[in-house]
Each structure stands twice: as C-alpha cells, then as structure tokens.
Length: 110
Image 1: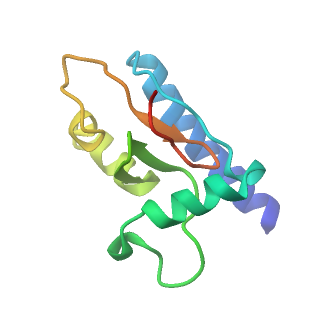
Image 2: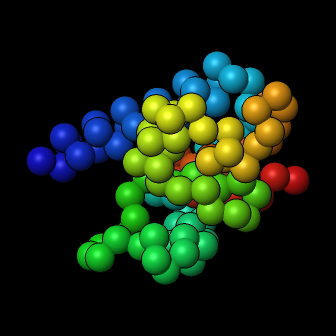
C-alpha cells in the first residue's frame, strides 16, 4: 500500500512538472523528504482551511513565491477548466515564475 501511494504521488508530481515545462514556466522542485526545515515551512504556509482533516498534506503542494496556490486536485481542476495560469497567479501570455514543490515544498524565487 505504501508503494502504491508513493507511485500515485510521483505520477501527480510528474504531471505538474510536465505542464510547467511544456508551458515554459520557470519553477523549482523542492524535495521535503530531505529537509525537515522545508517540510515545516510547507506545512506552516498551507492555509488552515486547506489542511487535511487528518495527517499532513501530501505532495505535490504548489506555491508561487510565498503564495499558496493549492494541491494537485486544485491544479488538475484548473487544468481541466483551462484556468491553470490563474491558479498559478500568472498571466496566460507570460510564462512567468512559479514555485513548485515535488515532495513538495515550493520555495520563494530569488
């Protein structure tokens, strides 16, 4: 069961990365499994009303600078409704910078 969950998370992360790359949107993947500090930053910066009822939020979680955009479900819904640039806080004509965390903490752009 753990392997199945890991594979599902990886597939979701790859889906987000493929979209960002295909649209030439600059992003940074951050692996929170390697940094307790980054994991805690992610947990702290997800709005309380977007936290799961139980446990911790699962990756991918998407941020633009320090602004929380949403999780994979929000990303997928925005992709399906053709509003993903708005979801990311970007203008459709400008493939600008977004932060994206794989395993998942997106961090602020420098």
